[in-house]
Image (cartoon, rainbow, N blue to C red; front, side):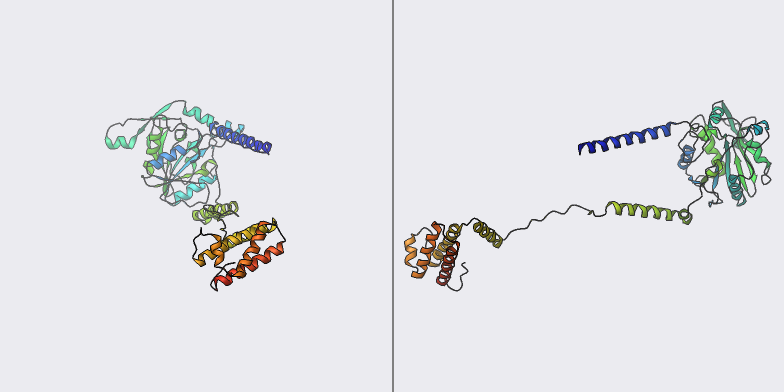
Length: 396
């Protein structure tokens, strides 16, 4: 049994170490591919950016489906990941890195047709390449609208990253985009910053490189300030911000239960937990354990037990002696005699039949005789005592 317990102890210990090691490896690994997911805590994730927007008063959520409902007043944030190209495509520098029939582009167009606004940026497929671009230097970004309103040049923001090739030229070829965009804030060369473009009935803010919004670079330089200002330009605080996860390839269509509503998913989980609890508690009582109640024995039970012991031990003299003591107590109470009065005084007041029965019982109390004789003598004594005490006596 001890060996069995020791086996389970080491099994659970090794399982715990394996789980901790797996978690450390997962959290400590370096992203080779870009995954700008709003709930990803990896280096290429956007969870820190989403949390900063929540602290600024925005209502942030993620949309992983292609047919999800997005409010026209919501700001859609889409970080498009450039897909890797073959060697022949690399030779053609003008080839787009994202196809117009991309599902993410279709979702964005539907949002623009309803008069919505989106903030679009991009990352290379290789996050190693994106990191190299982000660490290659910093760009000074000037807010031209603020400069025009104040009449003086504001202090530029230092942000990480350089211009991403290919994708910034691709979106201009879409027929439903207005090519006459203008820079809200950018560097001196107009290569990096926020460009505002009209799209269908809505508008699109485009930043060519999204490396500064990732978890690895958001806290560096003025990246956080730059990206928060971009969001404020397109939507005031308190607005809903929807991260379009399909833009970087994470497409998850909602299940049947989720399609009904979030309340249905919550009810489904609660039902599952309730069933699990029922199985785990099957046959087990809730609350404090009930206290065991002892059975209290009565005088009849005590008498039955005593008689049973005497019968098995053939202790007829003892039984007769017990009866004689009780008889003596009852007779003295009836005759109004003190407890310490002589026996002769008691016998002088008794009838002859009762004295004869007492004498016979006293003889059997001193020697072990037949059980039947002792029982007959005890019954005669009981009858004579009850006759002497009267009808109200319960002596037996």
